[in-house]
Image (cartoon, rainbow, N blue to C red; front, side, top):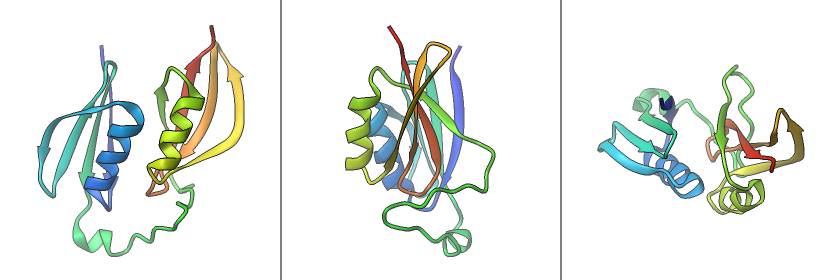
Length: 125
């Protein structure tokens, strides 16, 4: 069984590059200017380009500002929160300083370059 999510983006190519490099996802399908499908062992992430009129209304900040107007948060299992932390920063995202343990995982939230909030989950040995 595979988990899947769809993320809408203002900058399709940059967001696909961010998730690919930070989380080791490989592109398995694409339509230029429309969508990219990335996969890892347990995940399929489809990134869809928002229409130009919608993109024009989206304001992005540098560093990215947390989008708190959505009840959705992607959770991605990683071998090491620390290792992925640097990749996220290098890719233009941010990582929260708070790390906590819950139900056998070490958790830490991150913000991607467009402000979407995600969560890293590292198994505790």
